[in-house]
Image 1: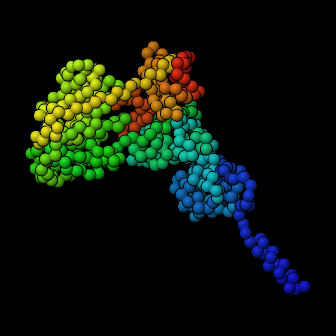
Image 2 (image 1 turned 90 degrees about the horizontal axis):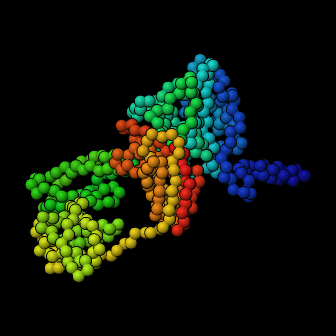
Image 3 (image 1 turned 180 degrees about the horizontal axis):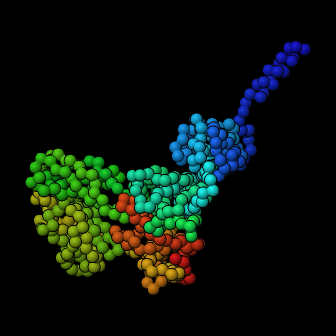
Amino acid sequence: MIKITNIYLILLIFGCAYQGAPKGGPKDVRGPKLSNIIPINESELIDDNKIIISFDENISPNTIINSISTNPAIDIITKVKKNKIIISPLDTWPKDELIKINLNRSISDFHSNHINQNIQLLYNLNNREYCSINGNLKNYRENIIYNIFVYSWPLDIANGPLDIINTDNDYSFTINYLEQGKYILIASEGNLDIYNNYYGVNTIDYIELDENDCAENISIYIDEPLEKLKLTRVETVNSNFLNIFYDNNIMEPYLIDSDIGDSIYVNLKRKNRLHEYSIEPYLYIVKEKLDTIPPSIISVKNSDSIIVINFSEPINYKKLLMECNRGDDWVQVDYNKISPVSIEFTNNEFTKIRLLSEFAEDLNGNTMLDSINMYDISDIPEFEGNSFLSGKITGNFAKDIIVEAKNISLNLFYRYEIEDSVFIFDNLQSGQYIFRAYEKKNNIDPLIYHSGLLNPYERAAEFSIYRDTVEVRKFWDVEGINIEF
């Protein structure tokens, strides 16, 4: 009898040893939901009170690391016990001082499902009144938690944000407990780096909160990172010509002066979609290289009635002579130099291009190999969709407005600057479209949306998105696409 009892106890102990989620059943894809806070938010913290935050399922202890912050900065101890997060001061809570505690959405369950909203707590409020900003993101990328950086106006990035709040699982956000004042909001997929992360900026100079308007609602449009290239290496082609390589694997030709000495600093300027910038100078040690390689044509492209010819190296344009065939005649054509290695000219029903080698040489006097170089012009016909779509911008606006039509499946963009509130697209490819109207604000490319800058600060352009997707089919006429602005 004793032996049986002992075996039973052993089985009982081992049967109760395993703890964890039961196997089987539907996959857990829902994040933990907040169920209770003790002491309640906006109450009083004294001495070494513990804050106990409860959820409807267990929390992974590893996810609370760097997920909880306080303002002012207070040394705290955080623990996880099943579905509870327990926060206590290392010593005591500051007496009679406002304490703000933020729990971001890095916190998750054991299946990596994040909590569905940023949690903001405020203690020792003492009847002070605060304002709030509510908002939502447009054009966001799925399954990403965005950071909302809160700055006071005027913007000083070096001083750091007043607060950082995560978007909720529906890509909305609420910033509570703001004092009256002027604020700037910037959304980002990661840290505040608009050259590497998708980002967005508020569309007014600043968001003002005062006693007459203590709650604001805004929308932020998320756009792609801005290009800011770095020069990675330089390759010598000959004494007059270098190949410049950038960190995006793009190569660009670069002409140099023959009397530069034994080294030069390569100083370049580039433009992204919003602004011009300087690339960090690159010290290049000149390498002598005898050039005996003749130039050649590497491509002839014909698109939108413009022919572009790309050479293998810079050409002596003072000597270059080119003829084109039209019908039974060969005619000499004038061209525009668009880079050291490229020219363009208008296609006036030409079918062939002819270059004589004696008039086609590089900067070192090497001529093309063949005495006559002939190239066929392969036409790339323009698409003729015969689809007509028109609409109107409604509302009270005193700005120049651009309307953008995006083909969702083909990722094609068509843009139109409105005239008298009306926009017309007469050559759209078939597919589903989304439409957006925005303020014309971009000085680099006026048709492109201005997503905002930080240094110097520039707000993003105002925008409005049409409520529905629109289907376009060949030979269809679509009318009545009215976008409120």
